[in-house]
Image 1 (cartoon, rainbow, N blue to C red):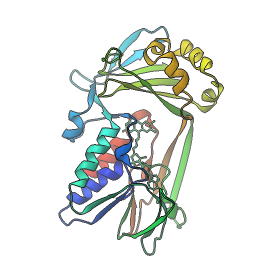
Image 2 (image 1 turned 180 degrees about the vertical axis):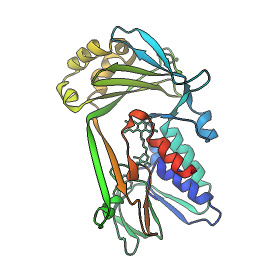
Image 3 (image 1 turned 60 degrees about the horizontal axis):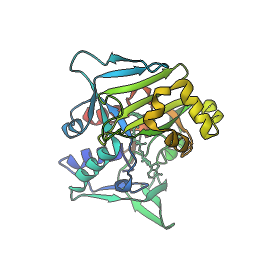
Image 4 (image 1 turned 90 degrees about the vertical axis):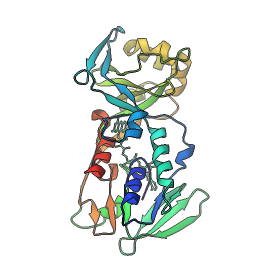
Length: 301
Ligand SMILES: Cc1cc2nc3c(=O)[nH]c(=O)nc-3n(C[C@H](O)[C@H](O)[C@H](O)COP(=O)(O)OP(=O)(O)OC[C@H]3O[C@@H](n4cnc5c(N)ncnc54)[C@H](O)[C@@H]3O)c2cc1C
């Protein structure tokens, strides 16, 4: 099995089966060392541990260009979606998986290739060495740019399509203000601006993860710290003091904007040797907040 989030979850489900498997999970990085935050919207399904550590968001909080805020509820009174800290979620799932004697976690293993005939997988390790492992069943949970899926593409009658949207995304952090959330926490904050938008989700440590979605060509026009501030003054002026001028100037250039792709394919499996799951099988763009929900639901049903 390859990787988080879905990889963790699917491994957990597989080991819970009474007939059992020897489950080997391979991760490209050491997840337990990842400290960056990424909050995710999550519609509560039945995972009580996840729900108890999520922050309920009862409504969207719409920020106008003048800074005026108005609420748009998600449903009737008492209904909400959750903001879930992905790093914590991964840790919880890994901790659970580790309690099973038949499960082994292997970090810093990047899948390079595998054989549909023999099930032999070749991994590159961090130190440059290679590892080869044979499996009866390979579960490809390695995301929208799946390496497991490459073997499927070499086969006849495999349907595959991928579509990049013109938008990219970038994450920025809004720190706590005097130890408290800088904005009201029980909302999904949105700054809608026609062809682009920023959203902010609350985290347990009282930060907000802000995500700026914008066409790549607009990201590329902003080339200096001063241009970042000018852009924010034009479109998200109320967010500037909350994120901070210096942080904005610095963090905007920390990583380039990331691409978003949707993927469709069929079939999802090669005989009884390999199955694709999660984004490897059906990636969707994040605007509906459904990728992770889809992943969980497949297992439940
Ligand atoms: C900006 C953004 C916001 C989103 N917001 C939401 C949201 O609010 N709610 C929601 O439900 N969904 C959301 N999604 C979608 C959600 O992130 C995905 O649907 C979900 O993470 C899919 O899980 P996965 O395990 O299939 O893939 P991933 O989470 O992508 O995990 C795949 C893993 O495989 C590893 N990997 C890749 N190649 C290899 C290799 N060769 N060898 C070993 N490991 C490998 C990667 O390192 C990665 O860790 C969002 C997506 C994006 C991009």
